[in-house]
Image 1 (cartoon, rainbow, N blue to C red):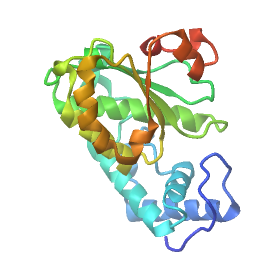
Image 2 (image 1 turned 180 degrees about the vertical axis):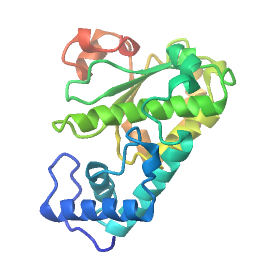
Image 3 (image 1 turned 45 degrees about the vertical axis):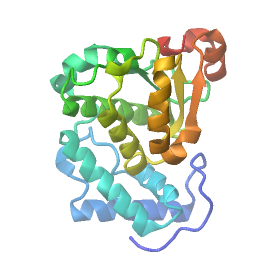
Length: 246
């Protein structure tokens, strides 16, 4: 896995012949080296040509860099829960049913999956950090799987944080740092936009702390007021919008 595939980065277009060949080479190399972790089963996304192409474009066509980054992603994802990231079963059952996060049934007006987080339902320390990590990864993986299933989408997802009722007890800096880190390292350029909905005064000092941690991702953040006007910006109809935005 060496060399460079020339051409600009465009995550929406189909793969060129050279890109397809490079992506196939990356997948073959990772599987041959054992990095693909076949024991993880079908729940492990990532060791396929579509994801290899994504990492290739993220690295500007640098095949070696893309292969190394994808390999690190596969290893990490398998370590989180032995590769079973799409269906975690009872491991995060209690936290999952609490309703603090979910993948919305309807995609946005551009076909992007939507991950919703209800901040007021998360209390720092209520669940082990390992459980929160697994649940967070499951939501992201489920959204990406849905994006992969529709070739008409651009492969990204929309995140909606419902901040109504947010207070100091809901702020979990360890989990926030984890989410930022994995988005950069293991899900590069997958986040299309992050909506912060109904942010109260109590969120201002939190944003002052978090914004520098986001680095370039801070430009993807938009503050929105809850309601139909905001819903119409991102969804075909108000009825399609998630409760986190209304």
